[in-house]
Image (cartoon, rainbow, N blue to C red; front, side, top):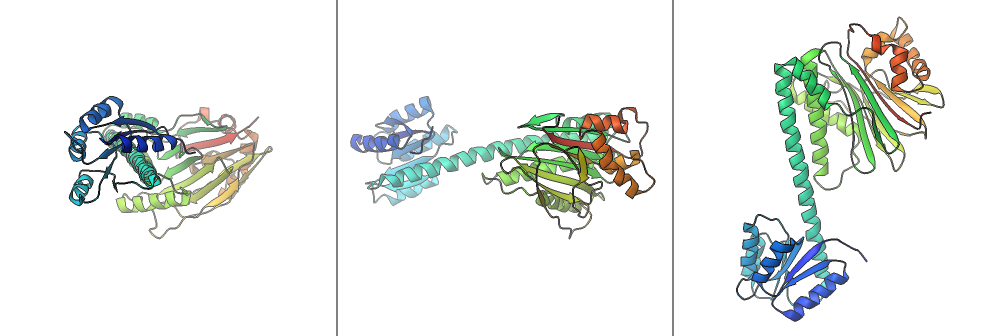
Length: 394
């Protein structure tokens, strides 16, 4: 039997009908409160705060319509199912206009119809509450981002603090996975950005972005990227169930957003989603070099992939690649500023050297700091960003 923690309030002056409905719904797993008239029902409603109310329309003193009006005046959004005899269609229309979730006609010969109506109304109420929570979170995020943009434009010192506050916690450990990052700006503000976050109970997303140019104008776009990914996640959650959340869709969304903003900026990006249930990584590449480096069993190699930069071509399309994640591994994402630190005279020589250095570093961020001498860097011509995600590394 399907159990639920929902509490229902039944208000009906017919003791037999009320007891019959209560017994059936209690057998269906609900907690049921009862009242035999509108005044008593309003008192129980205010004291107990039920999740849903079932009421008769025709009752002495306070009828069903007046009861709905009084509850609406309290400013509490609780679904109401109206149950009444046939022949009062005007009252039914008025009840629905006042916000009733459903209208059922007595006698209820099949109480399964009532149970179905109750569960449907509770589901709708739950979705409404979740959407309100997501909307409030988005509005709070929008306010923070607007304040961040203002600070970024007016004060580079404050702007740097804004960027640091937008970055995720490092290291971050979640269900056996560890995420760690470091960003080294060439100027006071950085055009490189990383983020990682949980999508839902089974999926985790991450990305590394490298905005064209340097300084405040590029840092402005990193704030915009944070806003666009946050808003996209909210929009996809509004229906109550998230879709596949493909990295290629995210890159496509950002591509359209940057082009529409007409900022004259583009971004190279790497984005991925880890499905903890299937153990798979789905990733997409938007014109980014170097490619991600996978380290397992003491060896390092580039992942395959290609794609156009983000925010440059309106017709750009992005694809997804899927791979099984090893039980023990690390995945290193780097911005192209790292190429200035690699040995070799040509791009090909530098790219050949990178997997060897990741192996030498043991696939860890701390190892890369040592191997690349990141603690002793002088002035750099380009921003450098590193993001390493790992699992079960010795």
